[in-house]
Amino acid sequence: MVDFQVDEGLPPTGEVDEETWLRLGESRWSLGERILFLRSPHLRGADVARLQAALNRLGFDCGRVDGIYGPLAEQAVTQFQINCGLEATGVCTPEVVDHLARLGAQSGDGPGAAVMREGADLVDAADRTEARLVVGHFPGMGAVAHALTRRLHGSFHLTTNVDSDASAQARAANVFRADAYIGLQASRDPGITVAYYEVPNFVSVGGRTLATRVADTLRGVFPGLPCSVDGMRHPALRETRMPAILCSLGPTDTMVRDSARVADAVAKAWSLWWADPVALNEVGSTPPI
Image (tube, rainbow, N blue to C red; front, side, top):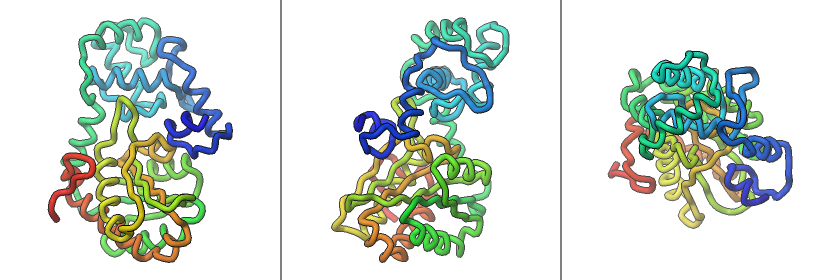
């Protein structure tokens, strides 16, 4: 159970809590076992993620591979059906899965349309002075989040913070139409982990470069603490529609006591990233500043 929770970006408690139970339910579906269509609440599952990955590889952009059958997935399925001469219903039926399997065998294993689009969107942002940023925080990180928000307001006045569960924070960031989401959560262990959204068939390139920037600046503030950058499936990263990171900071009392220094470091990293969000060619390599 712990291994499953780690893979899903959930707290590795070994207990089957509500979120773990939901993820277990999602993981049982294979593509083709059920009909996929747009509804409210959206269908979720490993089969949806596999569908999204297959469509992205074929050039039908359905957004990030998050396992959620939303409007972008329906739109991509509709376009795929039109290109295959099928009835354009936006519903993924066994016939659609059959066509995907046959065409997918010739598609290769490239990054897919969604990854390429995110990178292009970052490069082509029209107005880089009016960034919209959401700072989310979980129990224990309120002081750090408020310090970061105050620090950012000087240069980026469209910054707000959210204190709620992960899914609610993601919804708030989506409604706000944020350009990025920075989450802060307390860690039981001394050390820093900066996570971005990544699954086997998708990586948020903007999230990865932002996470690397933040980790680099925090290492300078806390040289004695281990600091890593990891791809995860945490709900706050999965359900946001923009580059997003989640900073796990510990020990909590140290981070709260040094909240001003943490805020300065993260704000500096954010400013560098916003000025050039695709400057990092590889995780862990930062160009001279």
